[in-house]
Length: 283
Image (tube, rainbow, N blue to C red):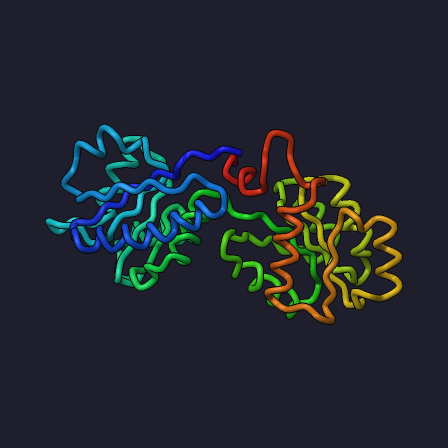
């Protein structure tokens, strides 16, 4: 699939920092090109260039702005002006200040993920690449059905560590809660513990998959991955459903299984959408 450049506007009243940001983005652009994208287009400007904002802001896909601008202004002033003018492109603020020292209205927007925060201490290619991916995609909606509190905490932390996607984990403690949640949210990933007390997690996973086969469905179980029961299940209905054993899992392995199910199997593709990332970007 042909992709156009990702157009980024960076606003900073310090010319040295504008140059520094451009240097880091050159590294990110190469990474995008290596992944098959056309690359990135960056324009760096000062906050005084009012004509740019009034006439050309809508040609950009992303705005990244330094928090502390000249003449006692902050990124909050610029963001309020853009929102008042109806500009709704994704915005990130970068600063050496912690979030707690920023304007309260900006703190609220950061906490609600309307605005992203990038510390200048994180001006590294991998950190900025992660920010760009997250700004351009909707959060990953994950249903996780688990009745064990410790396992639930471990899995939630592992999923939220994914570099490319921002995970929004919806925890259900039983089959009924899972069914109710699936009525209101289109999930991208459905993780189901095989042993849910009174409920059969394997049957629930099959039910959820039958209801929405575009979601990546994965069963988590205490059975060993090479057990005879798992081999039997694989031959019956597990072909479109992933499996993770609790006997040998860790954060990296869990994330790897989720990403593989998201991006690889043909049964999870949508007509007209070439990849899972494209599906998120179309939301």
